Image 1 (cartoon, rainbow, N blue to C red):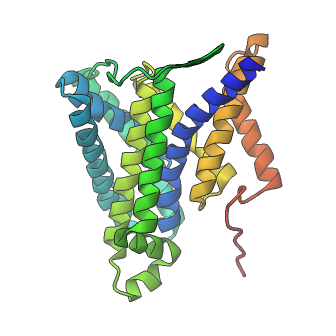
Image 2: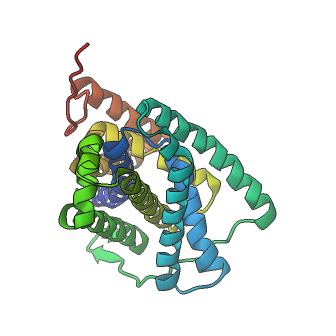
Length: 296
């Protein structure tokens, strides 16, 4: 029973990282109906930008973090201006196709740049040790910090969206772009803000994942965890992203602890997609997604 409780706890902490990745997809989708398939490369670049300042330039964590997030946000805004803005008003599928192309372009670009600069290097974030030991229960500090900072970022974004004037404009654009523009809201600028926020969220998740000792271009694969998160929780549901992220984190943790030791190494990656497919058969729009009815 102790092992089960610890495994579920670890799953929740990891699931909060996945939830933040899911949030980054949902806020973009709600505003533009475009699915950002480039999330994996956003994650890699965001974490590399942070470590370039934190490890390579040796800046303190509290200085490198906001600078890294600012750089990631600017990157997201520039990408939105260059690739998404020209397609506004056209079929959202075109924007989704562009993000898929962006994934491969950014992947090749990162490898090209690293050939000349090399990896910025990795070092521990230096956060206070908050390892929790309750009897036989043990939660490592890195996982706890990942859960705390990702949940905090999630809450800050929620406060911004639901409790500020800028957030009201974001919700208006997400509800109906045409009506929002009719009321004088600059929808194009709001979309830029949304992409910047989304990129910042991805960067936070990437930094926390890198803190486990993983800083490489292969981290892009972790970004794809956002796909089952949003499909299970609902493409347009912010709360669904939080719940689905935790569900996937627990599922992954349970499979790694109880099924993979039976010889099924790597099955945790398969299990979350099996869960995704099963959920889609039962809830085609996700647990909390809005059902869409189109008349022909």
